[in-house]
Amino acid sequence: MNVMNVFFMLALASATLNACRPRPADSTSAELLVEETFDNALDSLVWVAEIAPEPNSTVYVADGKLWLDTYGGVTVWLNHLLEGNIAIEYERTVVVDTGVNDRLSDLNQFWMATDPSADNLFSRSGVFESYNPLSLYYVGMGGNTNTTTRFRKYEGDGTKPLLYEHARRLKANHTYFIRTEVVDGVTTFSVDGEVLFTHTDPNPLTKGYFGFRSTYSRQAIDNVRIYQLPE
Image (cartoon, rainbow, N blue to C red; front, top):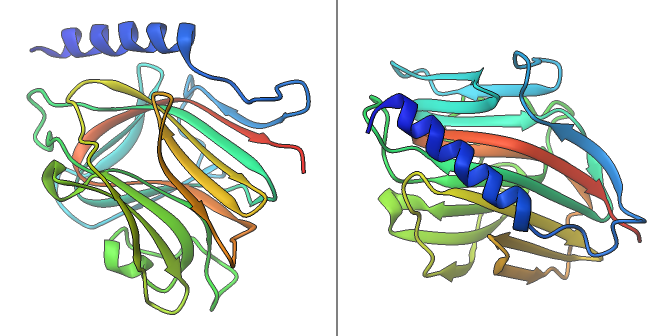
C-alpha cells in the first residue's frame, strides 16, 4: 500500500465517521471549548509534545492531521485545563504501511492529569515511566503490540492500579472515533459508539489536562472537539 492509498483510506473513513458519529446527549447545553482540525502548523502554545529521544521520532501536522511518528514514547498534551463535566472527541488511525515506525499498537491517552508535586505538568521526556508520579486516568488500547486494552488510574504517588481490561484490539488503518466523558464522578471511554470502560470513582479527578499518548507507531489524529457538559 503506497502513501496516496493510505491518505485516501483515511479520508474515506473520516467522511463515514462524520456521517454517523454520536454527538453530546444534550448538544444545546454543551459548550464547545476546543475545536482543532489541524489545518495549520502545530501551535506550540496549544499543543505540547514530549518525545522520547529516539531516532526517527517526530510529531508534525500534514494533510490536515496531527501525526505521531515515533520509535519511542510520545505524549502530546493539550495546554488547556479541563474542569468539571467534559466530553473529549477525536478521530485516530494507527497507520501500518511502509513507514519506519509502523506498528499496530498503542492507541493510548491520558486525561484529567495533574502533577501533585509541581505546578508545571509539561516537564517530561516522553518516556512512559516518567509519568508514573502523576494523577490521571489512562487507557492503553492495543498495548503491548496489540495484545492488551486496559484502563488505569494513576494515584499520584507512583502507583497505577489496573482497574479494567477489555478484549478489544486495534485494526490497522481503521479510523476510530474516540469519545471520553467525565460526568459527576463517572468517566467513560467509548470507541466507535461502543463503551469499553466506565469507572465510578469514589475519589474522582475533577480537573486536569488531556494528552494523546503512544509509543513505537505512526498515528494520525483529526477533528478534536472538547465540550463542557452541564453540571
